[in-house]
Length: 262
Length: 372
Image (tube, rainbow over all chains, first blue to last red; front, side, top):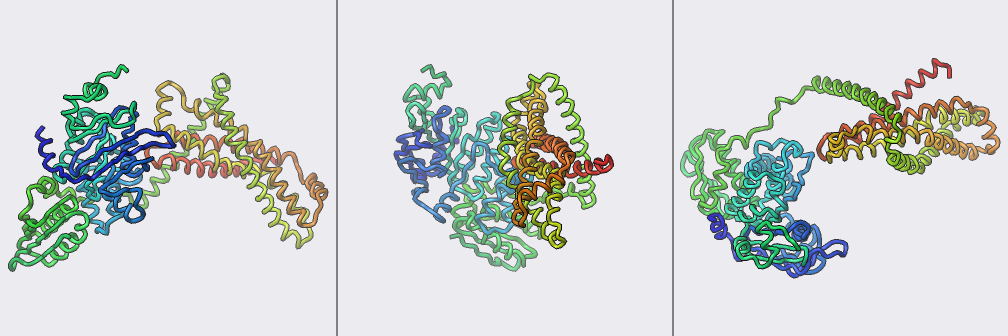
């Protein structure tokens, strides 16, 4: 695990995300309760769990799409829901999000998708925007597809383009929702390597929602595991440690890919 | 804050010294200042000193790549000094890559003449496709009526309710206002000749023969033709239509026949309703002009010719079929992508209106020669 040790060197003691006793849900239904954890700057932090355990709900609460029912979510020591106007916009622009479907704008080329945040929030020269967009695309291996429409490229490529767009404003915190779901193993491995490279070379913090075991073991520094039976975190720690010494049966079943008989 | 210092190292060489954090916030200044500094440099070398740079990301690297590219264009030597090894992996990914500066290929761009020709061919092909579709649809309709239990009657009734019953209010509003406007506009000049009672004749013939069916068809095209295209288009995008095909189910029989039946059957009823409401609009104007209800209906009886009514209702059958058919056809032709369904609905409405007007014109000529 040489990659792991190299990454660890970049992890600082500074907390970039702090979640305190958060309760999340919709329409009065509680999906998650008593969720408390923190993410250090430079970490690749993985949120995992079985289907329907609330991974995506947690992510949507972290990125400000949903307001927690109670508790607090601090991103870079700021609560998104207590900010308004420019301050909220500034905090939102300081992190990037890759959605499960990619969520690229279908009427724009891949390069235009990546260049959109630059056009909207900087006064850069159009040639500079074009170059930076191309470079971001090269970073994810899509520079030759810059002028393609999202509908003309594969699902895996769309996900990579979405990562390039999330990186457009050089955010130091990136959220990825199921980055390797539905991808072939080779493309998924390529995405994992990309996350590691960006984490190592730029010190970007990644919060990754996934249930792909291979990916978890390869990229994560620390993980939390959610479970729908308790609607909360059932395990937290380094992946190797949780795999070798699972604190409960649910974690053991997950890491050993065993059927949960209960 | 980043600092940019551009100075002549000697007579030939230019030294660009950068310090601080080179990220997106520094890129704008670095981009413009370096371009400006390089403008006067025509020979020698450009040395970029990064020894005081704390952070370098992709945006900062973009500026270095741009300087390198400008140097290459001017045949200047380019070198970087003092780069922190941590930043090298990012920088090395992009340095010397000419592809980053390539422009999109314009070889496929067409001239205006080619564009016009291409558009004409597309219209012609579309027309052929329409003929083919309506031919195929006619065959499927005949086959469906030979096995009526296979027709999706529940879908037909749902469509009948959505496209017909639920459209009554908007048909009433449009028809009443059109009847009112026509009568009012005609009454003003006719009054000058003292023949304003003949407004009733004008309205009766125009509404029963033409406007009742035409207005209803326009409402149906805007309201239901677009909905048919959107419903079937979304199914196409979600591959539900492909699922039907692979199950061996004919999408035209499954999706189009029920909508066609509903469209054809409901149109005469809606047209009849529109006729009544439009005449009522005319009645209001005539009452305002000082005529009595009796006078209005006496004149209406004189002007009323059953053949006008039957011609209007006969045409409405075709208009209903055209709206439903065009909506379903455009839905089935929907391509992939987020704008595809929107494009289909637009095409469904526009093509319905164009075909309705064309068919109405053909009917007018036909009835003229038949003397009805």
